[in-house]
Image 1 (tube, rainbow, N blue to C red):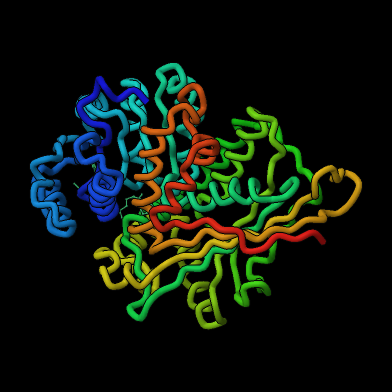
Image 2 (cartoon, helix red, strand yellow):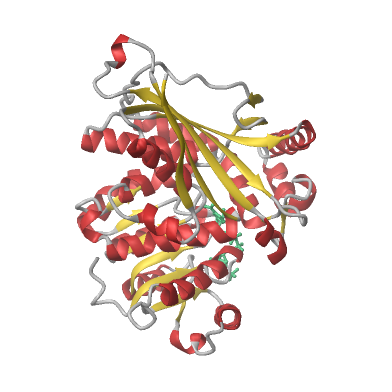
Length: 428
Ligand SMILES: NC(=O)c1ccc[n+]([C@@H]2O[C@H](COP(=O)([O-])OP(=O)(O)OC[C@H]3O[C@@H](n4cnc5c(N)ncnc54)[C@H](OP(=O)(O)O)[C@@H]3O)[C@@H](O)[C@H]2O)c1
């Protein structure tokens, strides 16, 4: 990627946010880990200089880099001020956009595309991600900008996990189910309410997503082998001895878009995909079912959405808070994402029989929201900077899988503690 003309290779926009502060910290860590301290000029951006300075001071203290605050640029930029967005975009090779909920996101994408700047976000809202594709893909290609959405825990592990599973299968992978398990330590789990707000607006906007998909009227992607059956809303996963429910994040939308891209542009056989989250024992199932029912009821009405946003702690039974998780909670948490794939061995015709090959893989990593997400986002940016010849030849709006399937992103993630591995593989 061409970086010579721009003062900063990376600009972390929204660095004053709960997630943004950890993304900024991760860029500072990456500079040291990759020996790029002087060759990776970067800046933080946001609407409050004081907050941005405090973020840099905290990172300097935490990482033992006293000169950090003076080495990193500060850009004042507000989503509601297009000129400030243009100014930020002109100074960066890549903007790491941490400003959410992402209904704030379109002006950032627009400014980046118009200025030929690449942009990576950690959005988990399918309507934003899909809308950006329809509105900006062609213009981004023309300008040579790579706009890559959902590059956090939502949805790099799932999207790259399916690609990894496909690459490790001895034959043709046709369907995958994934099961997410979140492990917590003695202090329990907590998520910052920025994600809660995004979920409230995202679910409140489902009708626009439906409308967008109807208007797009895409040709269905072919189904190879038997159609992947949907599990019941509550099912028992024998392999993991746990109850599971469908995972309602962006993973399914993202993985399907990647599979469509790989099929339509590279004639690869598409993989069917479904995502579930493990709930553990029956007590957690009951608690989470209440959270889910309250949420799905209240999110349908304007006043319900206001209540959900005002009282995240109450309506989420303590899972989301305005303070976010403590350091101890983050240190004690981790995730495992298991993939169960099926397909056909080399030379076996899917038209002539049932799948005869199975594979189980996994992606394992640290606390998802504020440790794994910054790692995934920053490694996506490093891949964009360093693996240019393995990216799609023109810019555009891409899922992580579509942008990075040929690159070394999985190796980079493995080195940073988000580990991809094969658990088993067999013919049946
Ligand atoms: N993909 C994943 O797995 C993943 C993981 C974690 C988070 N996320 C997503 O990341 C997003 C942020 O979450 P969070 O918890 O960090 O939220 P947050 O703490 O509320 O941060 C929001 C950030 O946006 C900035 N902002 C708001 N309005 C702005 C404006 N008009 N102009 C410029 N900046 C503005 C805020 O700046 P001020 O400080 O000035 O208010 C703050 O820096 C959410 O959409 C969340 O879903 C995704």
